[in-house]
Length: 115
Image (cartoon, rainbow, N blue to C red; front, top):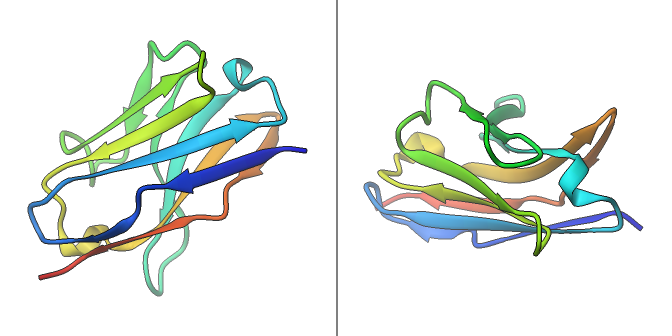
């Protein structure tokens, strides 16, 4: 059974930092590209960051470039998103995503940036 379980969301003040984690199971994690997506209130889901299977390549949405960092640990089957200099517009439900032909999604974790 495929599972992607996100954690680490919460309430943070503007300018603050937060680290999201996603624990994967039920598939060959090291063979899948991993991404973080988010869905802001009233908006469509959008891709935030993607990391390649080995972790050697990554790319980011322009809106988070220079502030967010995606990483993965294939030994632990986890992918993380380190978020810094958070802005109110980063408020969203963040989803972990695995892709290799098939798409797997986590249930999402809420991030709220507010003073």
